[in-house]
Amino acid sequence: MFRVINKIEKSYDENVTLFFEDKISTCEYLSEESRKLINKVIEKEKFTGKFKETIKFTFLENGYLVTLTYVGAGKKEEFTEDRLRELLFSTLSKMTGNILLSSEEPDLCNTRILTEIFYNINYSFDVYKEKKNAKINLDIFKEQKTEGMGEEEILAISTNITRALIDEPANIINPESLAETAEALGREFGFATEILEEDKIKELGMEAFLAVGRASINKPKLIVMRYFGDKTQRDKKYGLIGKGLTFDSGGLCIKPADGMLGMKEDMGGAATVIGTMCSLAKLGVKKNVIAIVAACENSISSNAYRPGDILTTMSGKTVEVINTDAEGRLTLADAITYAIRIEKVSEILDVATLTGAMMVALGFAATGVYSNSDEKYLALESAGKYWGEKYWRMPLFDEYGELMKSDVADLKNSGGRWGGANSAAKFLEEFTEGLPWMHLDIAGTAFSDKDKKWIKKGATGVAVKTIYTYIKNMI
Image (cartoon, rainbow, N blue to C red; front, side, top):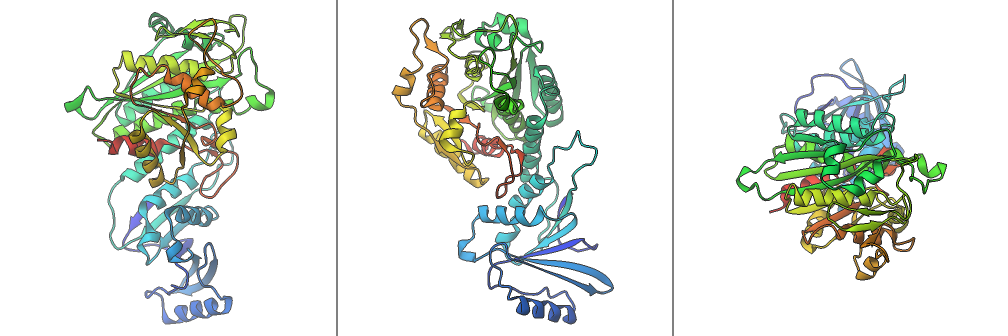
């Protein structure tokens, strides 16, 4: 449980107080004896409040055994919201039970960041474990109490929905169960969902999408989510496209075993747009948003698509298959065309764990972004900074497009190793029909193999809060 309170009515397992360096004080509500004890220990241990410096006190106060921890936030002039995120994650993730946190410094009691870190720490993918991971209950003491579930809490919950979808194994999350989950979340959070089956997908001419998924026993589903928050401008619609490969074996160009292990995460883009739709609808954002997921599995059988095949996309463009493991862009191409031609969206933002090349380029620190609009990219980058997420704009030079030209079709699905993330983005741009467009390659940021600063091991839920804020703030 997470609460903001202005009156202390119970005892706590941990009492945490944050201080800037050299601005240490003792709580005026404690007895004089307790305050003297605290001051003597501080003097003895030479505690000054350096960044992440801690000191713990245990004493009797009115018959209760109190555990009090002072935590240093470093110099005030060096304060940033990201340093606060790191400090809170480092401090609270080591604790269990009921915790009271307070500070005389408003910057250190930022409810938005405290909510974010609380839900981050308490998220744990332990569904299949007999022994569940311990969680914390956190009360924030502030003079001005806030009521109800605020924007930051809905966003934290939506982010954890995304994380849970990514963390689920592929024997649980397949195209059908992902579609069912989207429908259930739509009913809960307030957006409409339509599921298109294989026959309808074929009727629409989405041959590229169907080719990727046809070898799997789990048949493709086109998941269409609609939220109309601005009925006065129904023609202005944001289009979100999420890559929905619920498992990617690589197809006939099969991945090595080590490369296949994490491929349950290849629907990270789909999970991201589903989580974003939850937050937009629940918070009643006055925008119209259509989210599309072309959900399928890239598997192997006698009818799998092959290197050398030529596929006709929904747009009419033909694609020569060079590598069956460059499958995500084929499904995204048809999903983008569907969003533009059927749903009549005004702009496109696609999210995908698209390329290993992006991980080579940017590692795990930042999400690579491609865009044909300076204005849109800068707005996204600003939204990301607000939530402590890093985005980096990548090049869309014409030379990368040249790599995607085929001798026997309009395009090919792989331009080779060099500049692979860039050529993949140029491939997608071919299907945007001149609309404002952004492509987020979250291959390096959707999942973390260990705790880092304020990032918890496992699925991260990256981009949910950023895309929500971007759409909410756009004029």
